[in-house]
Length: 54
Image: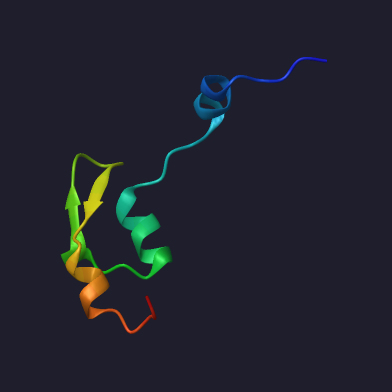
């Protein structure tokens, strides 16, 4: 019994747009710096404006 490699697992997945994933996580679009349809950086200011404890 062999295990799949990381790349084999990744290739079987269906990618979702990063905006959809951010929406599920409760991250507003104003905090996203998109790099294409599937990647983004999240602005650090999101942490400053969050009500969550450190």
